[in-house]
Image (cartoon, rainbow, N blue to C red; front, side, top):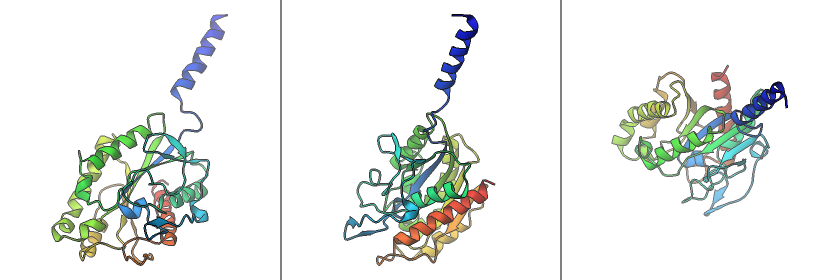
Length: 258
């Protein structure tokens, strides 16, 4: 074997080792927060009705990271093995992914990293808490074989509307969380798209909404869920609203990435 052929074979082998396969996600999105991100669309009486809208149907180029840190084709309910103490249904994640894929054909394989857990306050997401550590470790695992984290989609705050002190502290807690995520993921300009609340568990919804909409940190965008239809529990978005929210999040991402 000549040196030229040997060098060529070694170059090919090195490229295969260093480059992710075509099936690995290239554009990765972290889904974090509480129940409306985890998805309660179609959940009634402790059961999910199994209805998957066309906007949320599987696509071979949309993957999800499982609780075991393995990539597979994404399918509803995205958070079934993450938010394990609750029944999960339709959230905004699949609608978002399908929308960004249809509106921006240049996107590669999309990877969704579910991290949301229902009923959690923002204090439970502070640095070094179990939820925070799990989110960062899952995000880190998601890019282990290549790809880029394009944004964190954050929908949380309903549990912080019960006690005024929690609501009053929301903005400072959220701003610190954003800084910590960017530091620990070594991405100082990581796009954060937060959802301004449509509902809450207590009477301080407007306080938390004002905190969310008042954040002016660079590369932090807000999508307002107010006005989207709620289920009869007056807390969780309907399936139709989750589909709409996913599209709104997609529009916010695409506008930020131009």
